[in-house]
Image 1 (cartoon, helix red, strand yellow):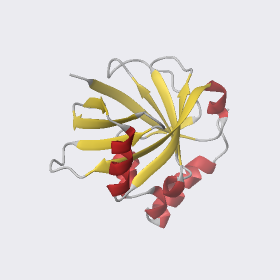
Image 2 (cartoon, one colour):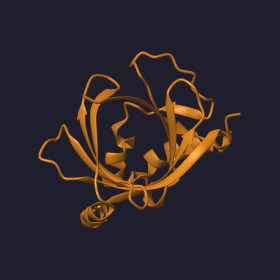
Image 3 (cartoon, helix red, strand yellow):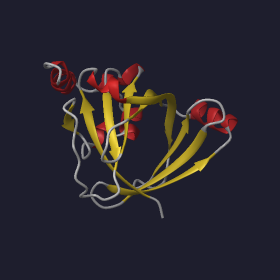
Image 4 (cartoon, one colour):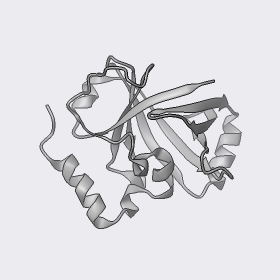
Length: 173
């Protein structure tokens, strides 16, 4: 059984860019599910690179995750039928301690930039870069599934202002 162990952080500034190894543009949407405990995502990352992901709750920062490749035409057809599609540019980073990626959200979720690291153990030690200014692992509103349904731009003004202020404070070194 696949187990995803992940921590997520809100990112400020551009200092992360010197760590970029690769990038890809992603489109994804979440399909309705009869189970509130499961999310079903379709994701497309360009020609002939599309897949389904099923995620189930686990314990703490770990959850069960299963991914299956699907034909690009099927992914495009599913994305067209989903009420909310989330788009972002994902960057792979050369940081130690786990597999680091960073998402720069587009459209209604701009200006959010979120880094995430996949770990081997939930209690694994980790050096967090200074540009990761707030851990959001446990904040459901920042999950991709939640952002596809309620984009950052639709959040109440005071809530947006709170997070924008954190991002606008002096950039971390």
